[in-house]
Length: 342
Image 1 (tube, rainbow, N blue to C red):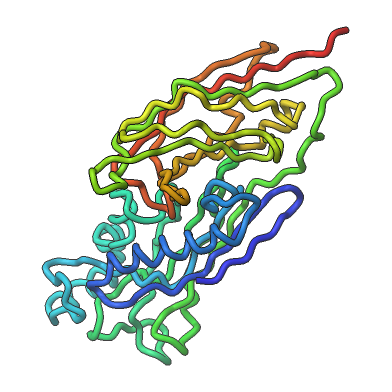
Image 2: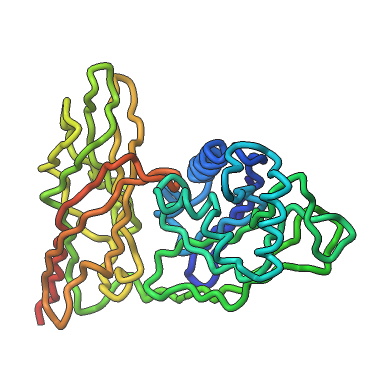
């Protein structure tokens, strides 16, 4: 996989292009490829050492992802039978794309939380883009099941939704056994308000009642020693941002997470910021990340002129675009905005 990132106005965007493992039976390998790519990129791009989906306003993931159609009883065979192939081609000719797409491996794996969780994509109301004969506008080879291998997906943290204005194949390109796919996306972008507001003296952000359920076992006894750490642009670099370690528990309760005295003292600016919550396992010499969640502060900021607000959250833990088993994290966020004395 290859990734680039950019900032447009004050909007952070990451583009990832990937070519995943080929062949009908390599679904699990493709899932693993995606997780490896995201974990690798997360170590090098972004402001924090955290999943890119927790850091960038928009992540676009695209390429020859190589997910196939599990049509009929083909199973893990590379090549469909003639009957299976003829049935698929007939459905394509009759534009029964929804019937075929219901067999799509990628969509199935996403629904099961095994790859690209939280990503979205458009509807593929056009013929499969693989495996086609070269130098033909659209003709399939019997060597493989027709499939939508070429995909474009996105993940967004912004309040406004991404709009897909078009999604289409380039049928006139005939130099490959794939038809290229293109899309036009309208991404919400913004200019950030200032860091301070003259009427605000301080903003305090607290997390309490934080607990995890069903963490994966991390030691030989089937237990884990874990702690919470927080990341975000409102946290001073020198501020303490981690809890103490809760030992020998897969359902830990964290009772001493430090409050955040926000370096951003403008609620309008905080509307565009997020707190990244990381759960890590503490080993003798180091720590290992178990998973993340992200808390957009727009969900928790006081409303209607009030000075304080408390609100609960409950999320799946994720890492590399994959749910960490059935592990979840829940807790309460309280934000207090103190005004300057007149």
